[in-house]
Every structure is written in C-alpha cells, then in structure tokens.
Image 1: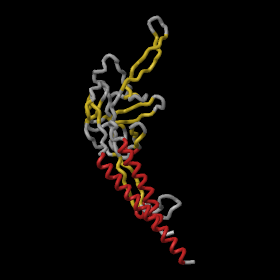
Image 2: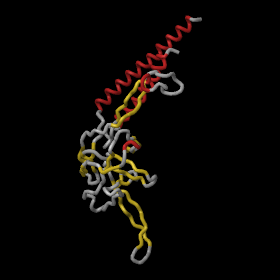
Image 3: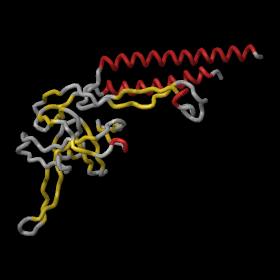
Length: 247
C-alpha cells in the first residue's frame, strides 16, 4: 500500500480528535468558569519515529500530541446571589468529595448549601441528630475555606462573605480536565499554594470560549478531514490501477 494512504488515514483520525476538542469548547460556551482547550499537533516523521501505533509504518502523517488548557479570563457577570463567587486573577476554588475522598479544582463559583446530618450529645447526655450546612458545588462536593476545611454556612446569614479559599499551583501546564467542569493537577504542577486572585461575591466568571474562533476552527477541521478522505480514496484508486496493470 502507498504510504500516502497511511498518512491520510492517520491525519483523518487525528482531525476527528481535534473536532472533539473544539466541539466540547462550543458546548461549554455558556458554562461558568469553563476553560477551553487548544489542540496541538506534531509531525510523526520528526516527532515520533515509532508511528502512531504498532499497526502502522513509521513516520506517517501527524498526531494531536496534547490539548492544552487556556487559562485566560474573559470577564465576570453579576448574579446578585449571595452564594455566587468569582475570582479576579489567578487561582481556583478547591472542592472535596467526601464520597471518594478526592480533591478537585474549579473556576466555577456557583455554590449552594449542602446539608449534613450529625449526631450530637445534648445537656442530658442524650444523642440527637442535628443538621450542619456546608458550602457546596451542588453535586455533594464541599468548598474548602482558607484553612483548607469545609465551610460551614449559617442559613440566616448567607449575605456575609464566606472565607472561601483561593488556591493555585506554581505551574498550571498539563492540568487535566475532569467531569463537571473541574480540573485536577498532575505531578509537574507542583505543590498547592495560596492563590493571588481576589474573591468577589455575587459574580460568576464567564467561559473563556471564543465562539467565533471555535467555529472557524471547526470549519478548518472539517475541510482538512474532507481532504484527507479524498487522499485516501485517491491512494486506493492508484493502488487498484497499479494492481490491475501488473496482472
């Protein structure tokens, strides 16, 4: 088979991955605090002499090596909700999932109150159940305060600015997107530290997805995908012609 067939086939598959990235960015254009991704490509000929997998020859086409997260900001919008918070500057909100014991980070500050039942002993030595309200992301994850602990909320005084923690990492490159608009760090991000961003109550951060730019990238990807498929068809026709002439 002509090498052009493999080059086109690999490139078409990688353009599909690129389309998935841009499609996800567009889907989250109205998601508060969302950080879009930017796909980056590398030529397999010079970047990866082993090819894209064991089934294809070396050095054919290009591959999407990463989808880096764009941490630039696009502004905030007012909501007049006391439990909504935005960060002006660098940093993340820290979330703790009590069910799994894991931590994640987000720029989405659309918080609510989450109830937790606890047993306490009264003055008579009897055990009774009471409710404690915590600041939550609405999905059962607790928002951590400046002291790294879940924040207790007084249901009658939600207008007060809560001590919501703003955290950051020395290096944000390579942080991984997770479900529900959260991000988790990787080893190269370093240790967690206090963020420099300023906490603002009653506002939410807008998604930094540029819809016009994403639509242009979608058109580019579609065109590239179409040309790669045309190249596959042409390569197959050439191989068929050569095969018929050799008989």
